[in-house]
Every structure is written in structure tokens, then in C-alpha cells.
Amino acid sequence: MNENEERALRRLDIETTLPAGFEKLSEEEQLAVRQRLIDQDIAVRGEFLRNAGKSQIAEHDLAVGIDAVEKLDHERKVYSKHMKGETGSGTYDLKIRGGDTRFIVPILVVIGTLILGVIVVLALL
Amino acid sequence: MTYHRRRWYGSSRGRRRSRATSDNHRSPPTPYDQSLAFVRKEFFNLPECKFQDFVEYYASKYGDGPRSYLSRTYRTWRNGQTRMSRQTERRILECVPPFLDTDKQFQLLGFYIPPVIAQQRRQVDARHLALSEMADHYVQIAQTLMTNEYELDWFVREVFSAEEIAEFLNVFKFTMIDGLRQSYHDVRNDLVALRKACAATDAAIDVQYQIALLDCPLDIDTRPTSMPPSLDIAAPEPRLVTEFRQQYRQILLEHVVQARATIRTGDIRQRIALSDVAAVIRQLQRTKSDQEYESTLAIEGRGGNFTVRFEKTNPLRLQYAIAVESVKLGIVATISAALALWIIARGLWPLLIFVAFIPLSILSAIWTKLQSLRSEVKEYERKRRTGVATPRH
Image 1 (cartoon, chains in turn yellow, green):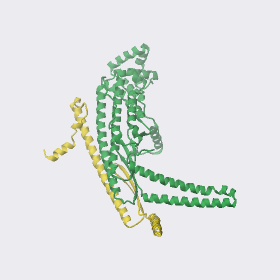
Image 2: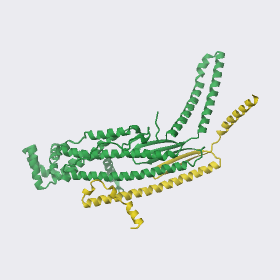
Image 3: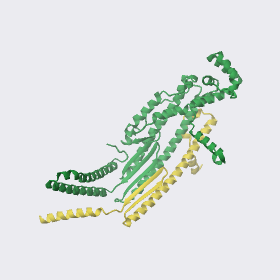
Image 4: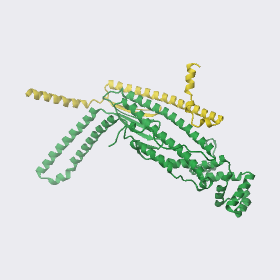
């Protein structure tokens, strides 16, 4: 048995998770239970792959959106961007705001005035 | 139903529509109605030999008069010419089950599975739960499930022995408590994993969690790691001693198979959910320090649904807003005081009474805004500090 075959079998290994009292079932019942467990595992794996794919797409969309925001930031624009999407496990919603530097000017003016005042006072003393 | 394939013409359309509407509004049959219909059907299909035994049993219970009435009317009941009285229906319901085979008897008892589960569901429903009280609450629910007296129709207790009913209830108590135990483990596991996943971000985090089994929101008021990892609930496996033990084995096996599927699906859901959280955090970390964001993730975990909200605010902007409001407050207060002094100096007291409400309302509006900005800063800092567990004071 090559490594791939062994890995493939391990993926569908249900022996370790057989329910208690399984050995008391008839052969037919055991087979039916085994079949159900395998079907469950296949369904779960299918769901995982589908959702993982959706999540990757969502992350990519988010990355593209943030790239666009970065571009706006470089252009020194005031922006507010809203992104929405579906991930593998649910939904996301993102609002980004930025580029608004108007409020920094008065703060700098006040700080500058204070520093200037301190210098003037020190110089006078 | 395949109504969409039918062609409806003229008056028959309205008639069919009204029939369909009345079907939709008809309430589902109760377990009692289902049992009655089932027993009636079995009664009319009893083999000849069993029917004779049944008639003897019926006579021993209700006397010769009812026996001869039953023998006389059986055919007309069967072909629908005579309607069975309520009293006879009750008697049939009581006397037929002992003549049914085990599978059919269990089928009869099986009509009471949904009501028992519904009664259990009513007991586990909660309106709101705090994480710090979760373990105690779950233990309390388990105790209630174990000790509760379940409502069953009169004939169930007449037809089945106390041992059979106890076994029936014990099987469903066991499966429900097992589900409860699993739910606790899943909820705790979700919160611990989320806490780890969110450790990488410096944003303020607000988590809301809805427990799937209890269908109630969970207030995360403590660190999930401080909770016991599993619940210590004593729920002994039911002893299967009656004739229905094979059916119960099937039910328990079905429960185990379903639980396994739930665990596997939950595991996958949690992995995907955590990877989504990590992906969003990765992308949010690419934002600059002066950018502000609000991101909400509504995701499905193992034991329930999360709503995770990441928020980053520019503290400089907030402080600026507070400074602006403070300056506004100072200016308005100064002007108001100056005006008031001027009015007093002029001796225009009545005017002061009439116009005082104008500056007071402006001051009150600015004060309210200032307070809300301050509490916003405080709340933001609190959420940043506490992460996933956000104790509310």
C-alpha cells in the first residue's frame, strides 16, 4: 500500500469512532451504521471544502477592498468605505473611515502656541 | 403537493384554493388523535384468532352487554355505517394495544416522543444567561430534566406499565442530558478558541453569543477559561429491561450517530469560523493607525452563533471632539453668565426667568454630548483591555 492509499484510507477511518454497543449489532446493522458514518464523514468533508473555499474568496475580497482604501489614503482623500460579504461560516461587514486630517490642524496650532508661549516665558525670565 | 402542475379553471380554482388554505390552518394531529387513528386501524385489521381473544378481554373488563354490542356493531363500524361513540373509542384504545406486536406497541408509544421532547425543550429554554452562571444553570436544567413529571395522555398510563413508561422517559432524559453536556462543552470551547484567535488584535472587541441548544443569548461576563472544562452531571445510562429494549437500543444508537455527526460538523464549523476571524484580523491589521473601522462578523460556531465586532477608533479624533465640545461649553457658559449678569444689573428679573431656559437647554445638549463622548472613550478602552470577556459593571 503506497502512502497516498494509506492516507486516503485514514481519511475515512471510522473504526475509532464507532458507537458503544456497536459490536452487539447484527452484521447487517453494523454495515448500515458503518455506511452512515462514512456518508456523514463525506458530507462533513464536502461542507468543509465548500466553506473553506467561500472563506478564501471572502478574505480575497476583503484584501482587495483594503487595497482600494490604501490607494485612497495615498491620494490624501477623506473616505468611508463599506464592505459586506459572505464567509464560509457566516457574514462580514466592514466600515473603514480615514483620511480626515482636518482636526489635526487646530490641535497642532494649540500645541504650537503652547510651546511658543513656554519659550517666550522662559526667554522673558 | 404538486398544485403548480395542475390547471385550475373557473370555480374549481377558488374551491381548491380555499381547501388548501384551510389545510394550512388545520392544526397538526395531537398524539392522542394519532394514537386513536392508529388503534382504530389496528382494531379493524385484527386477525380472527386475536379478535376472539380481544373480545374475551373486552368482556372481562366491561361486561357482557358491551361485548354483545361490540360483536353486533363491529361490521358497521368497520364499513363506516355506524359511528363509534367516545366511550367505545376510549375502551378500544385501552384494550387493543395488548394484542398488538411489540413493534406496533412501540409505534403507539412513539407518538409521545415529540411531546416529551417538546416538554424537555420548554425546560431548557432560557431568556438570558451569564457565562459565570452557565455551569450551574446547565446542572440545574439536568436536575429538572431528571426529576420532572412528564405529561402523558391517560391511556398511556393505562396501557403501558410503570416500568415501560419509566424506561421510555429515561431514554429521552438520557439523550437530552447527553446533548446538554455536549452543548456546555461546545459553548466553552467556542469561547476559549475565540479568545485565542482574537489575542492578535489591539482593536476593541465586543462578542455576542447565542447558545444553540438553549436558544438564548450568553452574556460573556468572565473569562471562559475560568469555567470548568466539562460538566459533572450524573445521568446513568438507562437500563433496558422491557420488551422495547431493541427499539431503545436503536434510538440510543441513532442518538450516538447523530451526536457524532453534530460533533464533526461543529468541529468543522468552528475551524472555519476561527479561520474567518483570523482572516479578518489579518486584513484589519493592514489598516493604518489613523484609520478607523468597525467590522462585524456573524459566524456559526460549535455550540452556537457568534457576533464578533471589532472596532478601532482614532483616540486623537475623539480627544479633539471632546476638546471642541469643552470649548463650546465654556463659551456658551461664559456668554450666558455675562448675559445673566447684565440682565440682573439692569434689574430685569422677570426677563431672566423667561429667557433662562434657552442657554440652559444649549448647555444641557453640549453637556450630554460631552458625556457621551467620554463614555465612548471609556467603553472603547474597556473593550480593548478586556478582549473577549467584557464584564459589564
